[in-house]
Length: 244
Ligand SMILES: C[S@@+](CC[C@H](N)C(=O)[O-])C[C@H]1O[C@@H](n2cnc3c(N)ncnc32)[C@H](O)[C@@H]1O
Image (tube, rainbow, N blue to C red; front, side, top):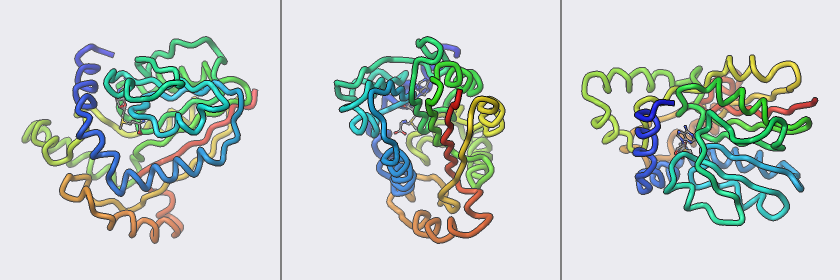
């Protein structure tokens, strides 16, 4: 990753106030509730767990007691907000400093869409994941209303500049894209089994203006139950298991 691109990410996420505001939005809390539900279903002991782009990890506390939890991010100020006994490290999520088949559980929540080379990161996850290990992914889904917002954002950025868009949206980085679902499905074939699902089929434009509105969550909770809608939620999840 070029230094310029890394610095842009770090600058955006060094703004802890904007980061916390994004994390507090009802839309974010709804998707985090889904992540929590998944994490609570796991029974992990003596496992080595790696979280990439952890920010202020919401998962470390759950696993710290019986496992070795390694929380990593490129933004130093965020990594440092995580408490020991988690092992904390500054790591670019495109290059994992771990040996092959060394990790039992790998967590990507809202990070792959910040990387210029998602494929590199996914291949690294496939490399370090142990047999019987798991990989969890939660990212923005391109095949959803997100795609419209993303395209509009690019247009406004072109006309008005990234600074203007930041004022409207809050915490974001100009180079964000959405998850490369095809790459996930190509890389995690063969030795892996995948389960995919989506949530939050309805979303208000991701503007600061709507930061306290629960309308999108309320409507999604209704629409997500309907066939078709439950395939085009704005957040896509993968639970991937390595069986050999
Ligand atoms: C939207 S936040 C998600 C934080 C956390 N995973 C969560 O969902 O609460 C994106 C995170 O990715 C980190 N990040 C961006 N580029 C990265 C890179 N190349 N390597 C590692 N982390 C990166 C940012 O510093 C930030 O903490």
